[in-house]
Image 1 (tube, rainbow, N blue to C red):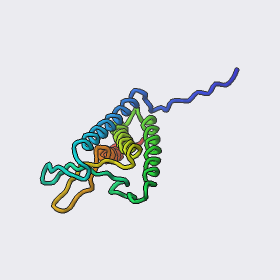
Image 2: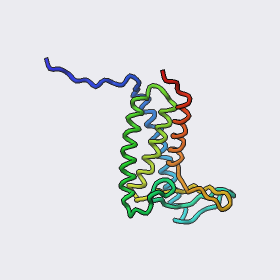
Image 3: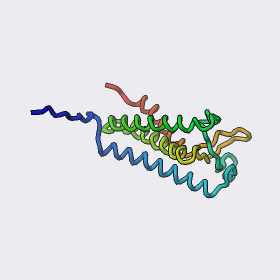
Image 4: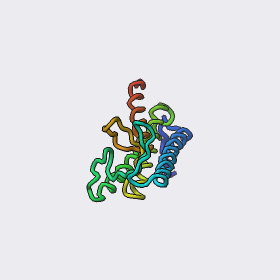
Length: 170
């Protein structure tokens, strides 16, 4: 009788919960892409709309990473950042799968980060740059413009940090 090979499901995985977290990531991607689509149709490139004394909606494109890091690499950065986003996305999905039964704050945080990574990846692959539109400032001090995907990644990172303080290892 031939030996059968079975992949053992990780003890802490739950397919239903995994797909719930994937739905969170998909919701982030959908919101991110919808807001970017609206900005590109309602605001001329390089222009802004004053909303408050400390916030504008702008339409800018970032060819680099956070704070335009490596933006002037002549297009090579698109390939590098896209490859990184694909690898990170695969790793996040694997970690989500292995932890989906427990640690809901951790998994939700990973799902936010996954959705943000995919949202910005879509822009990089489609346009070679990421649409940014949220512009906060105080007097002459501006925070670099960002988008919904960036917010999701930051909130996910904050959630993981918070969860690391709350989670008790046995």
